[in-house]
Image: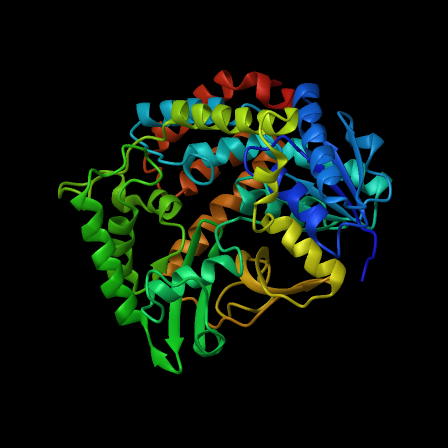
Length: 461
C-alpha cells in the first residue's frame, strides 16, 4: 500500500481525462493524502486546470497537495505514477490523415488507431512518450508509467519494446470496470433496460469473456448461471440495429449505425465487438471495396471539424468551472474518476479490483504469443499487471488480431527507427490498406504535410 502517492498527469488539459483525474484524486480516501502534479506545456491550459483543482480542493477540504508546471522535470521527482494523456493538435492532424487517406480510397471513421491515421498518430506521439520515459528513468525510476494516449496499443508496445526497464501499462476507457458491466448485462438480457443498479445475485451469476487488441476487443462468451446468453445478446443487438434506422442515423462518423455494423460482425464471428465505433474501421468489409454493396453502408469519414468544435466547447465549460462562473458543485457531482486513477487507487489501497488493461498476454489467450499486447481483464497491484486466463481466441478473430498486432509492432518500430521501408511495411500490413502504390503515396504525402510534428530524422538523406 502507498498512503501518500504522488501522481503526475502529463497533459492535464486533456479533452477527456484531466477533470476526472482531479475528481478522483481528491475524493478517494486512498489518494487524497497524496500529491497531484499537473503538467501541461500550454501555460493557459495549465493555469485553468490548476484553478479548477484548487477550487475543488478548497470546496471539499481535501488534504491533497497540488503542484503544477509547464516543465515535467520540475515535478517528476519521486513520482509513484506518471499518467500520459497529452496530444498536440489532435483534431487537426487526424483531419489531415483522414483527408489524404481518403484521396487514395482508404476511409477512416475514427482515424486514431488503425489505417494511415493510427499509424501516423503513433509516429507523432511515440517520440514524445519515450522522451517522457527518459525523464522518468532519471527522476522517478520506481514510478509506474500509465499510457492513456491513442493508439494505446501501439504506444504500449513501444514502451514494452523500447523501454523495458520502465514499469508501464496502457489503458483505454472503453471497458472501464465496473461501469460497462451493467450495459453488457442489459445486452445479454439478464437486466432490464431501465435497471438502476446490479443486484448482487445477478452479478454473481454473470460471466463474460472479453479479449483482443485495443479497439478490436470482442465478447466471445457470455453466460448467466451457466446458461449461454449469446443468442439473447444477438437478439437484443438486432433490435438495437433496427432502432437505429427508426430515427435519423447520426451524421457523425464514429457513432453512425454502430449496432448495425456490430450485428454484421456478430453474424460473421459469433462475437460482439465491444468498441464498434472503432472496430468497424479495423476490417476491410466496410470500406466499400468489391462489387456487392456494403451492409449497412461503407463507413464515412472522420469529421475532424466536429471533433475540434466538441473539444472547444468542452474546454469552455472547464474554463467556467475554473473561473467560478460555474459553481464547483457541478464538478463535484461527478460520480467516478477516470480509468487511470481508478486503477491507481486500487493499486495504492491494495483493493484487489479487476480492470481491463493493455499489457503483454503472458499466456492468458492460449493460442496467441506471450508478448502479444492485448486488452484483457487483469489483476493489478503495486507488483504489476497479471492477465486473467481467457482461453483460445476463436478462429477468424485470431487471424484479424494477429494482423493488427503485426501492423502495430511495425508501426512502433518505424516510429523509433524513422525507417521508411519499415513504415511502408506497416502500411502494407494494415488491414484496410490494399494497394502498395496507394500506401506509398499516402506515406509520402503525410510525411511532407506533417513535417513539423515528426522527428527530423525522417527527412535526412
